[in-house]
Image (cartoon, rainbow, N blue to C red; front, side, top):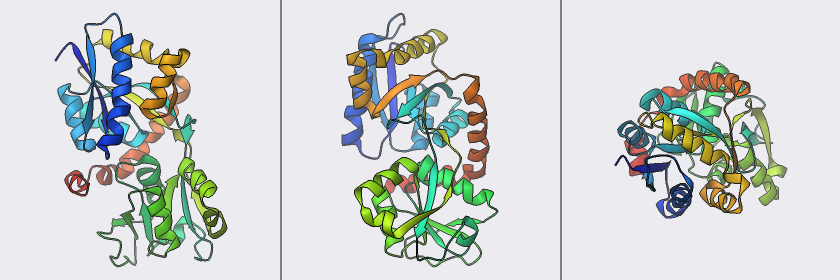
Length: 290
């Protein structure tokens, strides 16, 4: 529908995500001017593969996404980064790899033959970025199909814990030798659970990367692109806009993509190429697991 803008998100929990995306769609419907668009509607995708299809077809016109998934949308759907998104009170974040203090593991190199718990396949901070860290250290990685699958002696085996609490519990209970989260999740765990700080330690931290991007699909016209950019950049200046941002995804504000961000975007692309196979693997199986 040429007069309708699709506001998209990849959603594991439709009941939680639909009201969030609806808040942004309603705000854009009321405030986006100077375009042919008459209304905006929320569009939820089950996984990144489905979002790629929606962007290609023009079902989704604008979507917020973490950096690694954003690279997939750029490469597979010809999407374009429009703005940086400050989310959870931060503009940048990093990944941390942590272990039990009594594990005897002191560095990424000690993970050979061990098991690491990641959060979910689409997570930048709790899967793709720490996976790239491990590969950059020269270690081979292999997915373990199940939390009780045997270790791979010459590789780092990994499985998914689904949530930050599950990842931490897997390490605490010895199911995993290590875990990975983004530093915002790690700080929240340390605050909420004193045992985390008492019994676990970080052995590696990634470089900092932008927290999130807003992307537009390949069918978005130049006029609509400009209007979206202007409207999103102004959202934090009004009470109505700030309320919609908070509901949408605890967003603080949007920033222009300037020359200072270009090196970070190039680096994200390099890291994505290290993990591209894993990023696109088994979307159907992820779908069935929900």
